[in-house]
Amino acid sequence: MPEPTRYAIIRFCFFFKSICSKEIKVEELDKLQEELCVTLCLLEKYFPPSFFDIMIHLTVHLTREVKLCGPICFRWMYPFERCMKVIKGHVRNKTYPEGCIAEENIAEETIEFFSEYQKNMKTIGIPPYKYKTSENDNGEGNPLSAGKPVLVSPELSLKAHFYVLQNTPEIVPYIEQHMTFLKNRHGGKPQAWLEKEHNTTFGHWLRNKVI
Image (cartoon, rainbow, N blue to C red):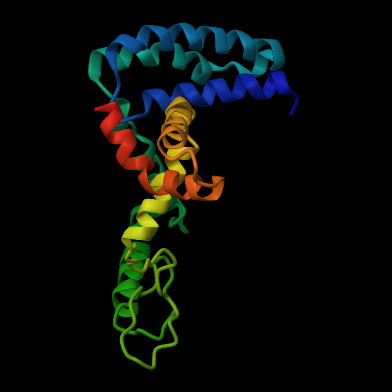
């Protein structure tokens, strides 16, 4: 999409992201309302009038609703609407919709209950078993995000700490001070020795200097 259109849509998405969060600052709602009005004006520039139905107009009142009732993530109907869509798909005979829904739910619950006792059976709608049951297991169904604990040695921790300090812009003046301090104290030493001493002592020197 063109950049102005994409920018307007992203602003609209950010508005919904802000009001759908679990924690909302009341003092920021007025600013959100102003930004939403600007966003709707941008949308009117790039979308036809048929796009602006009652649902688009409804967004103007959402910030006021949040002020009166609190975060909308505890009150919206999207989960129930999705559930109703699934239930409507169970209807095969429109003469008896309630019976079709009941039969489909019973059949689905029966299959899911049975599949839990069949470990070799690939379930439908149920995530696979994530843990190995024996040593000969082929590992199918193991979690992809399983991590392994790693013990970091003190030397590696110091190197990581030093790397972060060396690449922080606020620390650059302290680096120059420390190098000057080492040169004044050990003027006869070669540059390689001074750099090694800097790597070893800079963290402790900086802590004493800042404190």
